[in-house]
Length: 636
Image 1 (cartoon, rainbow, N blue to C red):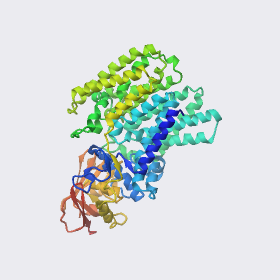
Image 2: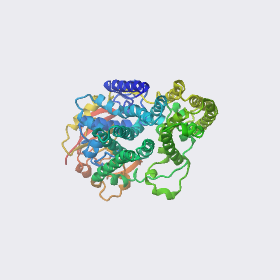
Image 3: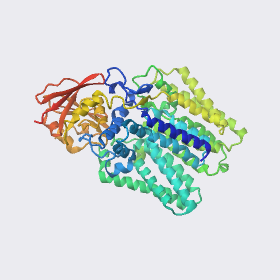
Image 4: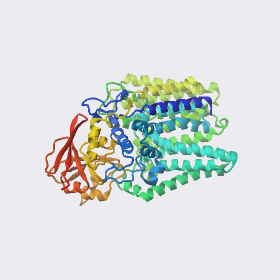
């Protein structure tokens, strides 16, 4: 390992250890809706502002992980949801959870450590994996250390990474672990012949493939291809093609077989595929607009005060696809016969990025619907991660470009700069439709800066100063996108947390609390309180829903995955179920009704007073600016 990589690795490890020891994350869990002090953020905010748009993080994934820590299992999950959630959520349930989610195992058995430290470890784990392994993988495939570190920084600083709370890095981490282990196993096998360490590397790599195979398909398909295809291309140039194919091919096949076996034994895939949302979604390519293609450098506006409202910052966030423009220009100008083995990796990475880009600019014909994996990727989701693939492809091509004659670089650098600057300006102008606060003159300035940065790096590809320019500009785009949060806010240890924990003490096995607020559900999950309301990660548990909906007439509403289940208390009324949003299922019902009591409802949390013969108020607490009441439900 070169000295720059060693320094980088030590800095990354030291930083992450410090963040974990102090329980610091970039979670938005301090949002005022999760505070017991009306109109104020929850405690622990170090700097910045929680981002309300990251509701899926602070209302769903974060409380779920905190619940695993508090309960030591998933016993707090709603019985209305299919129990095996390892395809879509952190899970330590059964063989699938243990093999695919080792971080969940730590969360459930690590109670000796403070909860904030465990949560911080799980939070930063994918960031650490990518920050350490991406430059290592790139250099192993022929990229120079300086270019590898610059590209890694651009991936880590991409708007889509920050405005999705690092989730895309979690998707990228699994295939990256597999690729690095295959490379190490192959190199050791080549040097020493058959050996145990190589086999162990391939076996653990297969687990990474399995994790990727059951990941979030709209992101895992393109990002896995981004890593695996260049790895295969590089291995095939080694002179030992049979061993290369056996190493990577065997690892991928073993991982895929393991994923199939784990999914088949649980029946989870069938449940997910039959859901109205998201299982029935299929897509073909289409033009997504210049804002999603080249608008990333302008997304600094999302973090600038005053906070922009009415715009989904996460859905607008993308990566730096603009780097595909200089990559193409350099690919045309470079003499590929002079660049050695990096040629194969560059061609493979460029081919993958180009294929993905066509999904965003071309209306693919319907007859390609047989291409099942790609049809699982909506174009707008592809747009969010294709910039990461373009950044990686750019690193390979830029390395090859280092061999170009110095006098011949200027024309290519100038063309790259002009075209990239124009594309960035056009993307920014189109981005002003959803973001009218973005000044037109700033769009032009940003386009010029992007052009100048590309001019510098293409003209002087080996210069550390030139390589540092783009990451510095990228840092400006996202440096305040998320807060720094120490601890767990009011989700744990607050008076509200103590109130719901005390209510949980009234429950025996098979009994549950339920809430009429998504924010209260987050509080319940964070404290491991068994609840009828909560997360329907994968899809419904049909038998349980049939208790509420015996005729099945509301099946369209409740047959959903990646969804919240929330109650609306209506004493004396019949039960009605409806999807109030694509991912929110609302059950309007009488808390004294036979159906909910048959499901085990024993405590109802309500944001307004309730009057019913079976209810007895047993507590109150403030949460998100509202006084919440806890009612014990008579067993009838």
